[in-house]
Length: 211
Image (cartoon, rainbow, N blue to C red; front, side, top):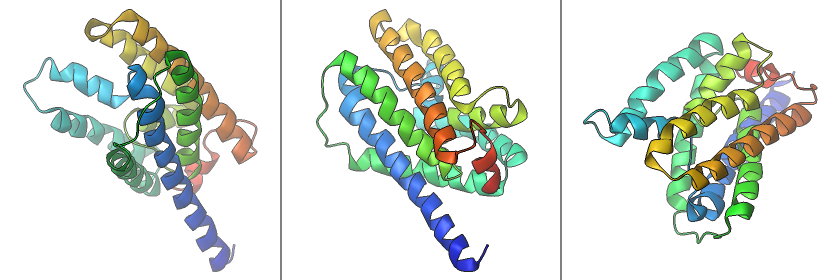
């Protein structure tokens, strides 16, 4: 591959990461937050841990991410970790920039569109060879070690366990909305990622190329 083509491919991959994280942030403010649909993932784990330990939520989230990034480096590669770190920072920046956006209070529509659009956004980030950190990293690592588990299925399983564990701090109805949104997002990730790659569901091809 010539240097020009390689640079163009690399620029496109970074573009996927930034576009994907922007979509995830938009989805949060437009559909998830206004309908009280929980944001699962490592943030949910950090909230649960904060009930047990007298530490700040930000510190807990940072500490929980450390072993996941180390696992990502060990099983996927240095470029994957760098792109995941950029993806996590990019998502944080977009969440800050889009904070002013008004939301759409319609739980059923929010559940469906929130799942589809956030799933598509995460698929774009994965296509760029990165993740948004947290559970995304764990899902990529599990999928790489045990290929029978797709990235979307791993995310569905891990996030569902987190939501079930958080039922102690939220009402059942919004937990159900969250579980449905997680399922839709997971299926969207698998469908979009495999189709965009054109590999018929080969989950690890693009992440490997970034390592």
